[in-house]
Image 1 (cartoon, rainbow, N blue to C red):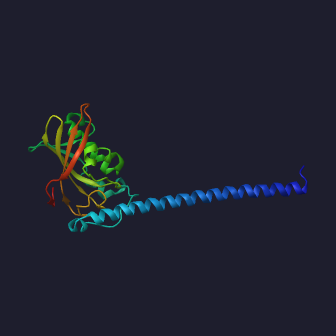
Image 2: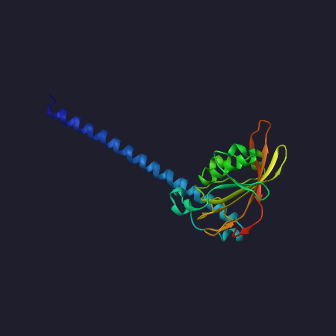
Image 3: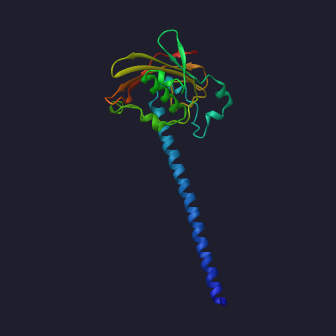
Length: 221
């Protein structure tokens, strides 16, 4: 049995332990809050820098901050749009690419098929890893974007050599936030195709060495 003094000391010890635990929990939450503030500040800095680099035409398409918590697959309207990836063989034939038939297409088309899904899922880190060293050495833009609601997607190989290929990728973006494509409007049917220049190394690996706009088409199909 503990005497009165020992009980008091034990109670005081428990209070100290409880106080330490509470302080640790408060500290963790404060650290988390500071981290979130830092991340928010970094994102805002990147966004502000992008705005400064935009030409006047591109600035017309800014529509507020990006929603990093937005899950486009929970948007019923977006899910009702044509989200298939069509392959143009350069003629009149358009075929729909999917996981069941992907192996029947050229490697360049398979590469771009995967790239499209990285964009849709907002996987900017994996998307940035698609680019070859020469892209970065020539001042290529690093990307940072949330999920992108791409639809009416089409790709076409317009040039293919032994180790290089040029692929046109076109699409529309529903509720475009400007983080990935600042040259497209917020919620209008417009498409501006991009040419991806792909290079294949000696082991068959494919990377993007360059990319550039093709031709602007408003109200595209």
